[in-house]
Image 1 (cartoon, rainbow, N blue to C red):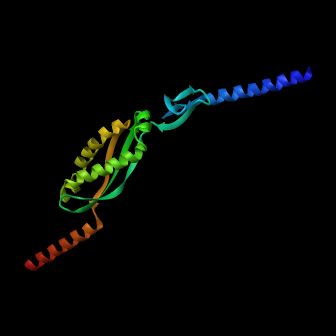
Image 2 (image 1 turned 45 degrees about the vertical axis):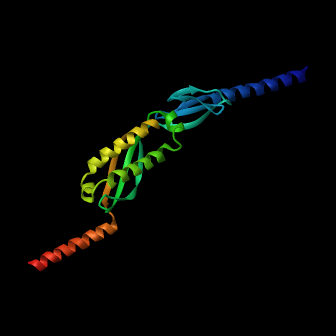
Image 3 (image 1 turned 120 degrees about the vertical axis):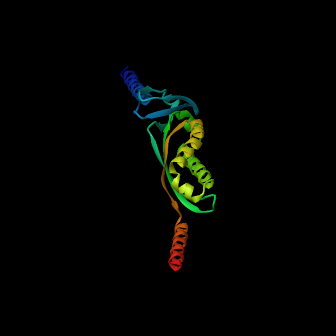
Length: 194
């Protein structure tokens, strides 16, 4: 009789621990500024918004944690050839925000890298249609065209492009040397004339 009670007590204790662990695994606290993607048995189930949320343990899994804060993407410096075959160096920065976490996670493999590459190719296209002097003096126009060119594609990926800034636009080192030589030759020519 005592063995039966001890067996029942051990079983009850194990069952109680299992229930407590299961309930604890089902409670999730999502921080402000994040949304979590839940998959049920490998398929998208729901998006958890900030606050206290519940999932079914062992069946539901948190697959992705997506920030809904503004994201700053630094676009690496790149050399671009203008319409008049001058080489300039352009560096940009972009501010994006995830507006639809499901599209951001399932619509593209790496949304940050995708936007960065999109900005780089669009920037090359825009500056490639300009002459050197126009590119160096039209920073605001380049910025506006760049944002417009990237914004539509970003919406398909659940992103909003808040701003794109041109950090730096200057002739390449070799182009600067050539410009200095040309200016020096021009000064010498003027000095000989006078």
